[in-house]
Length: 248
Ligand code: PEP
Image 1 (cartoon, helix red, strand yellow):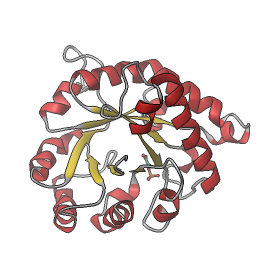
Image 2 (tube, protein in one colour):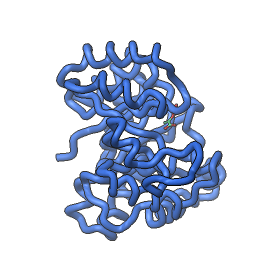
Image 3 (cartoon, rainbow, N blue to C red):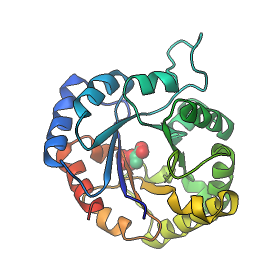
Image 4 (cartoon, rainbow, N blue to C red):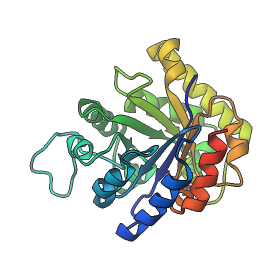
């Protein structure tokens, strides 16, 4: 049985004052029915992971460099994330692919770095609106999975997030059968490459405008094992309702 995961991506939001949201969340969900993860900006990782000690909430990074250390101004290695208390790292988010030119190869190198540091990699894939309109969604997702996920993946070191680019931060969500088609495809793609045993254990998240009102419908779709949540993860009240729905 795959345990569901409620993963919050705070993106470039939050200062120390935001830790109050985390305190509220931790108090309200002492023993949730799903795993909880918050990926704050790197500046908050250390204080957040200290706060999360002895709670049900895990912390993660939003990106890492492929190298363990060196002359890479502004970058953070997977080892540094782990040192600051991270257990997970989001990789290949479409905003990083767009803003920083990250390719599938870059993402795969970062995933290997994450594994080297003992982190679980949450690898993001997703099509643009034009690609969906052209009927290329599955082809795009398949190619991103093949290129971004390194050999050696398993249910402990890998989570895959399906995030249609056009649904991120827009309030638009694919139809449930569309989500189901992609998630079934992703499970089958993992099975073809890593075997059904591994494929059965890897959690597949949906991400893109998930909120307290739509989470129950989305999670009812086969092969959806949780959510990667941006905007609705910033407030304990909203994210708490998503956690409650995923924990049922
Ligand atoms: C995201 O960026 O990972 C995301 C899913 O954002 P939002 O929930 O705000 O659409």
